[in-house]
Length: 282
Image (cartoon, rainbow, N blue to C red; front, side, top):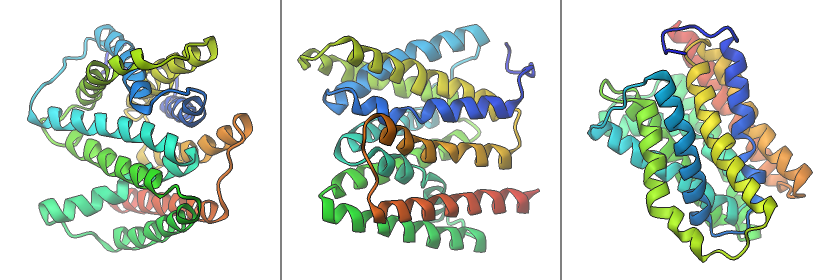
């Protein structure tokens, strides 16, 4: 299917499929007792093959320039920090703190380009930071503050990916592919130090690469082409909600009281920002 051909399946269905794939990351990470860097290296090696086959099938022309390179480094930072955070704090804290990326885009645009945030952005920043405070109130009592900090950094790197891909010389698929390739080359060799290679572990690692990263990004890049931004934003909010639910059901890991409050505040803040911004532009 070429990028110009409109798929028979509605774009919203692709975005929904992407959110479902992304949301499996937390529980799959918990079932792999490896070093988080080794996990990230191997899952990105698998994802790189999946994305590479998709690029060949769609005849997408890869770009490689400074913008794409920085985007790839940002992508590598996202996945690496996400893996580390999942081992140091709860999966729910990890995904929801990463979900703060849109707010960091506003902040980065101000400090780098001097673009002042509008009233909607300022209100959203205030709401999201209030939610972040609740997360760290919880993590300070449980000793998980370092994991929460890594998750927050992951959100900042994610913001960098989105920012750079919106530039004229940027290309989302190229940044994703090269970012995965970097992680595969430099981190996957760490897997030789691991000792547990049971079928459940290997299946979980394979699903992390093929489904949670590979298929997820294919569905997401396809769906967002044919879905209005408001609908995509609302559907995408399913990921930070479903992720901790899956971990609670299959792994027994629960969010703390303060983290639950923070999660609700952050999700509402991001949804408010996305919907208000898109409607004002329309």
